[in-house]
Image (cartoon, rainbow, N blue to C red; front, side, top):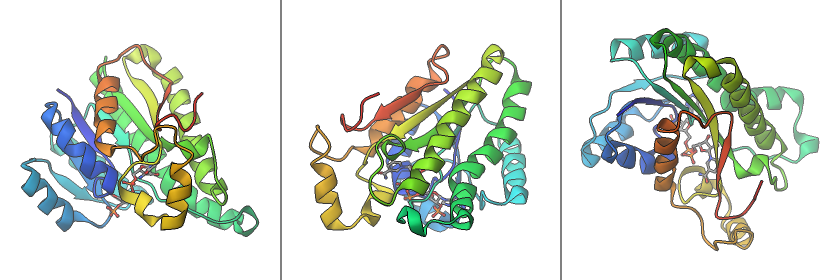
Length: 239
Ligand SMILES: NC(=O)c1ccc[n+]([C@@H]2O[C@H](COP(=O)([O-])OP(=O)(O)OC[C@H]3O[C@@H](n4cnc5c(N)ncnc54)[C@H](OP(=O)(O)O)[C@@H]3O)[C@@H](O)[C@H]2O)c1
């Protein structure tokens, strides 16, 4: 049993993942930027008892407050950097200011949280997990995804760097690269494009997001797996 802090817990993927992590016996600390009431009602219906903290992870002060709250609520063993946004813009329309805004959410939020989490995990001596969330798009971009792909690729490199720095302290850092999962931001993609994307997935279907929980559980129970990117994409991209 681990205590898992999950960011972006109000989103579609998290809602599929939380019940399975609960079933597997993990306890959770949840954070959402804006969907506290909806998340509370979801947890009540699902019979999950997990505290929620509302924070905008682009703000240092709110991340500081989040980790103080986490410590007051029993601390953590695992951080899942799941918060993120989709982004679509042709590369010639994507200037540095827009790219910086995107990185603030998709990359620097994970840096802020990992830095705080690592102070706690290192003091606990001997265990801890950092799990970043990337996308198949980082490996197989489609038109207009250069910003999103870059921000997710940065997360993968960051996880590998963390893995090296804390390898001898019992802490692992890995990335899970989701393919197109039947949840959350998938529904922001226009219908016609979804049909086209599905033809590029050998499995012939979008993924069941709840299975991501099994990969998180695997990483929690795998102290020798570190610095890796695990792909859940129905065969759409193979390393
Ligand atoms: N769905 C897919 O097929 C797919 C595929 C590949 C990768 N992913 C990745 O999976 C993760 C979850 O995606 P999803 O599909 O569940 O998307 P989603 O439903 O849009 O959820 C995104 C979550 O991120 C949070 N968030 C966004 N900006 C934030 C900020 N500034 N501060 C704090 N939290 C913030 C949102 O907070 P609120 O709850 O307040 O809105 C929400 O909980 C993302 O990193 C995404 O890139 C998804």
